[in-house]
Image (cartoon, rainbow, N blue to C red; front, side, top):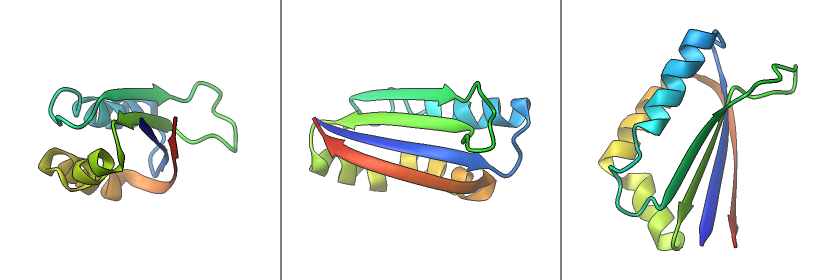
Length: 95
């Protein structure tokens, strides 16, 4: 199992914008066959170090992650995120 985690800091951190953006991520659920698990979390601490949104996804293998990266549904999400994000960081690990 491969876990892919991305943290997003948005240009506009207003609650409405954060929720709209989180919903864009949630909307991938059930639309990408290689995506075995998805969880979207919104930060509750709002500290200076905080990012606004955490995306956790799981795949059976690296091949699954690679297929996800180029999937048309994910490509649309990438387009949206590239417009609204200020920064992002990621980690991928096998479990």
